[in-house]
Amino acid sequence: MSRRSRDKQSWEVRASTLARNTHNLIRGIVENLQVEPNPNKELIALSVGDPTTFGNLNPPEQVLQSVRESIQWHTSRGYAPVTGHLEARQAVAEYSAHQGPISPENVILCSGCSHALELAITVLADSGQNVLVPRPGFMIYKTVAEGLGIRIKFYDLLPHKQWEVDLEDLESQIDDDTAAIVVINPSNPCGSVYRKEHLCDIINIASRNHIPIIADEIYEHFVFSGHEFVAMSALSQDVPILTCGGLTKRFLVPGWRMGWLIVHDRHNILGKEIVKGLHNVASKILGPCTLIQRALPSILKNTPQSFFDEVVLFIENQAKLAYEELRRVPGLRPIMPQGAMYMMIEIKMSMFPKFENELKFVERMVSEQSVFCLPGKCFCYPNYMRIVLTVPEDILREACQRISLFCKENITSREKMREFESSEMAVQKDTKVICEDIPTIA
Ligand SMILES: *Cc1c(COP(=O)(O)O)cnc(C)c1O
Image (tube, rainbow, N blue to C red):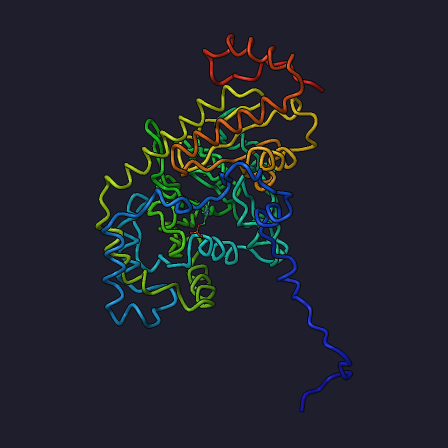
């Protein structure tokens, strides 16, 4: 017999606190935008961080063949151990050797990198504690944490220093309840790639304050010429690093949901409890898709370097194209990325006083020019917008022309435009300060 204090007279089904407090910032903002495209122009979405959207970027044949073969094996159909098949974890350990020595016991296969981040956060932080994340930054950490009562605190990145971490701000955000520091390198949405010295500065702060690092390295190796990717775990002496990665971005297969978490803890600071805890939390989904697990060793070993090089070169050229086009646009200041697949563009809002904020700016750009860029608010960073660089070249070119037209038509006055044009001649030589000298309207 069930015991109830009273008979329910009607249906009272409520969403749980966890469900009500779980939000995806990008979805929330995008769904509330008034985005009716101009019916005379085809919509160009520069908003979706999914390299497969336009069909121009595809994984190499070897990768597809690995999955075709996987379907034949009965081990690709059954359950795997919750942390993944040993062969797959061994393959990840070898593929990730640049991060430092890795034993397969310290690799946990996950359902995408977001799942790896969820494991890392939930294992390190309790309700009431906080996790430090970069601003601007990808906001999946917020989605994961807040429903569980874990607070997100921001540390600032510096747009005028290629989005390096404001180290002073980072250290000042640390308090008694700080459970972890998240570092995204290369960054979504900034496209920044940190130098070794800068990563060491961050690690030193973590070391002084005894805080483990969650390294979101889903864009590992995704860096343009002249830049170098260095894994945080390769630099850390004592700070435990939980590195999150996966197939998603580098192999252009976000829908395959294959990611991993690697525990780097050379000085056994975390002890057995954290790895055990990760196994416990991983068991909630009984392990990720075994069809892809079975294919993983072949995917990681047989993908030719030329494939990676071609994709990165394509994106680097796209970045140069967009940067060259947009830096000439009055009221915009693009920041040239060093890697990943995105570019952040500052919108000099004072030159567009008719728009209350950058949300209104991007909304109107959709209704006039049918170009949709993600507003900075999605990354907790107003007055900017993010574009994705993975779209085909002709579409990117067209999008930049429409963005330019939009800005020219909506900037405060013709007079200001002329001022811009003359000042542009003066600053053209130094691309970094373009737009800085333009008088702004209060
Ligand atoms: C895309 C992305 C992820 C999520 O990757 P999935 O494997 O699709 O879960 C995580 N972190 C950053 C910074 C990303 O851009």
